[in-house]
Image (cartoon, rainbow, N blue to C red; front, side, top):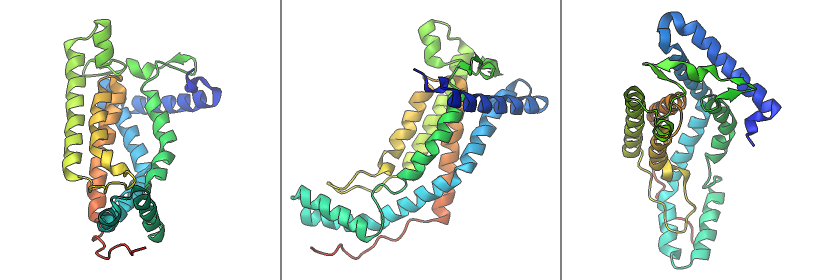
Length: 253
């Protein structure tokens, strides 16, 4: 069962669709046949702007992780052979510091409904019982509903579709590589809870893989989100620089 067939969600999805189409119509005098693609990019940017507080929360969580890294390494040195005590002391350290190994996760979960709703507009050929005409609009002659993998499976893949989506996938992968190089996560001591940032680079590359399987409209959303996220993290790193690591070892117990 498609959850977006449920009346409340279908109504929200239809509202988002109509807003996108209205924006596309307004942009047509300026962007011509690329108006719908530009509308996708602008709506994605609007969503990311509204979610800036989430990025700030994540930056502060990364700052805390950097500050606690030496203490976590010290705990690993002391209790590495006693996994149960290492886990207990690690959690106590987080309690003493009034933080959590999962700091930054709740804002991510909070943004999921908004992001999911907007992203769903780019995936569903039918919305609230009517055709999703957004996917029939084009970018450089390629329908926004066209997909690389679906074209391969159906045998309908043409050079234009392969070229446009291929370039988009390469750009997303390049953003993933830039993110991986610029934001290498600090090593996590053995036995400490896994940190969400540790998978950041892998998630960025996973985004490029996802772009191979989704419609072009969704690929534009993924590219715009990846570019915004990288830029936002660069800005926040200057505004909220990583804290100097705490040199005071965790207190013995």
